Length: 113
Length: 112
Image (cartoon, rainbow over all chains, first blue to last red; front, side):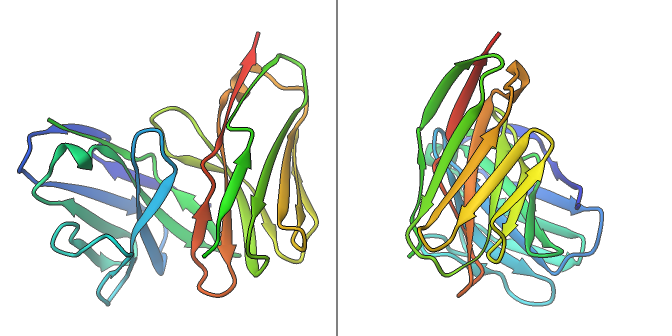
């Protein structure tokens, strides 16, 4: 199974600033995903990031707000731009491996004040 | 659009009791189904993966069944322990677009 690490594990940010979250996987993977989990809610897919192509965003999420980089097969970043308190969530990196089994990172807990 | 429902939303049991968590989904065109565990403020841990052609999967005290035609999966946890206290999420992967749809989860508390 894939081992996924994320940095930072948590952060408190001021309104209007941006935060970049890093995701590192211990093996090469084709498909990486970014999810958001708002307080008390289940997971919502933000975008799918494949190496060598632009990320594909889900309805309600736009590149200007959540730019994603995928420079190689083991690394990705998600930036949360121009933050507001509504962006306070856990952000999770995820990968697909093997028989379409999905693995998740430990998450980044973001609080926007 | 796939809708995934988990019942009950919360469950509290004494230690040693067996747990039964239910998951239902609206579209039977699934590729597979995964059960995850999430501890408060943490990421998701994959517990069991059931392919659409399978009826059940077992890992230790955990057993998950799948009835694709009726759109149901059940996670059984035998002889519960306080360490089993967590939120359990069911996720269904569509065979059409391979996207994962999550239920809202069942929060389990096992009382010592």
